[in-house]
Length: 297
Image (cartoon, rainbow, N blue to C red):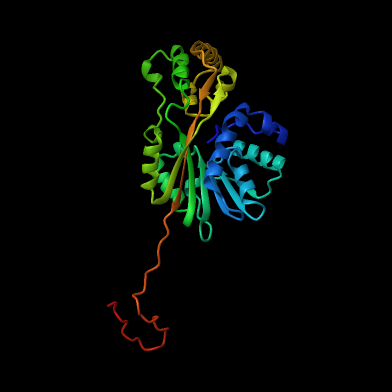
């Protein structure tokens, strides 16, 4: 899930005004879609689509006879996604404003649901993921990306230290919570997905390093969970936090920051039709006498 951002005025602006799109969101979205193995002509839901990092490669993978419904709550992100889709000539992706957890299933269900980093925004990740699965047809696919163990370090602690002088009470600077930390290893994520009624579960570690440029990484802060530490601060205080954040990152001496993800995929278990006992005759049609059905053996 990309951070909410300001809509661009043109397609070119959509590509350039988010410096992290090419370095971070686009590679993660592409990796999630690749793992989903979408078929040409498929009807796909991109849940918490942001500004198109996964929706556009999904539209490319399903081809002109497929459709991608890209859903998000941020109108500004959707506007950027529409601009990017126009830039790439993808007329088969529909950016829709709404809560994906309230979205009804299309007739027959989606062939696949893709959710790149979006489940962390759900009030309950397990319940939200199971709600997404109710939109998938039996035998359809789910592809979900989460942060891998160690990803984003040391950003949470650096921003926390940068905010501390602006909030004298320690309770006002809580450690940023990561509700999905228990899922950050391949084994735990695989078990979690298997518990969601998925078969053929596969989890892949996708390594990704982003340059440790403070200006680039600061653009990540305001629109993510890290940005909650800035809530209520006046503009001058936010600027002081930014300066401390820059100094803190430089003190770390890192050329890159790890943004690796785990991409988990699985197939929704089919509901098998009842099996007729061997030797049984078909049930009679309405209006005909009902004869006893032979029992096996």
